Length: 149
Image 1 (cartoon, rainbow, N blue to C red):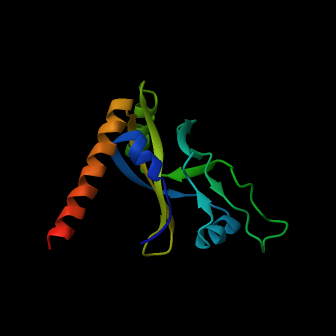
Image 2: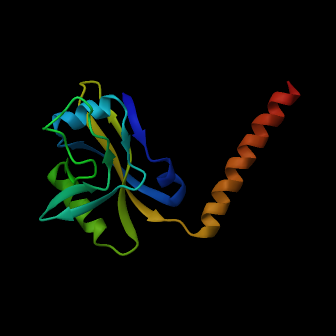
């Protein structure tokens, strides 16, 4: 599994409730740009339109060699999921305080572009502080264990 882009901000900003793996409908120039790792999903989010799930605001840079058939960098991209997963996501999207964001984009073993999306709930400021405190404690603990050896 070759990870192309990761949304590290999402793990800090949200509580992750459930994760899904989804395929994406991409143009050829988008796939080539992804192979060059020219993607950004930090501001991306998932919406529902007419019973379908769409990934919005994901930036895939234009491919240099594609002249006329190049893509728009921030166009909407349809996500491919099973019907049960789509229904579950639609129900969660309509719930107040719950959103769906992409966590990472990667190529699977077969070479297909996939995105890992998650149902998330926003953290409060004190939750973010607790996360920072826990992370700093883990660093300090590992630093102390290295010094004791």
